[in-house]
Image (cartoon, rainbow, N blue to C red; front, side, top):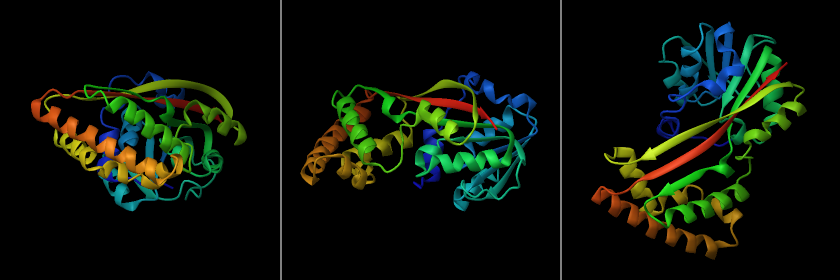
Amino acid sequence: MRRFSESYLQRTRQGMWDDSRAALADLELDSRTNILDVGCGTGEFTRILADESDARVVGVDADTDLLSTTATRPGIEAVAGDATRLPFADDSFDLVVCQALLVNLPDPIAAVREFARVSSDLVATVEPDNAAVGVDSTVAAEVPLERTVREAFLDGVQTNVALGERVTDVFAAAGLSLVGTRRYHHRKLVEPPYDEWDVQSAAQKATGEGLDRHEAELRRGLDGSDTYDALRREWRQMGRKVVEQIRDGTYRRAEVVPFDVTTGRV
């Protein structure tokens, strides 16, 4: 399973669900009594569940460092555990949910079957379709380069990070009856005034550090090491232009990530 830092999770989920929570309607949060958020990380989505419900809300994650942040959130219980071996009895919750978890698991069907075991009613997943991400930027080279990197990553990563609406197939294989699927678009903007993360992200593009974190996946998805090295040179050149525009106060970037909320009944 892929692992993420606390800062990455908090940054990439920043503002998510602040604009609209309509896509969560099928979860019937206002009528729940016991909710489990699997793979909760730092509890960004767990907080949303607690805000929208009077239920007992529990977050579970295998990473105890991330879980320590969840434990500080009011009204949320934090429990250490594996998504495919949940430390709960059958039918312990009337809603089991996860956000951006299945895309990082080698066997999402096994996880959903485990969700169904501990749920007496609903199972729901919020999963991105990373193949359909849209990017716009004032640095012209950034858009085609990001497309190339994304396509290579999708080909080289060893889990289905573009699961999105295809979660319905996972639900069917796990024996759940489909309640519905709703799409939510998470919009992320970089514009003046820039914060520390914006500046750091630009610097990582200019040095190639951000690309290097995914070197193994990209090499698998591209045609040999020379292609990766050439891509890295172009990426760093693009990053230097991003840094220049940030210094001038002219850099703007918009990204839209589609998430599919799939709900099924046990």
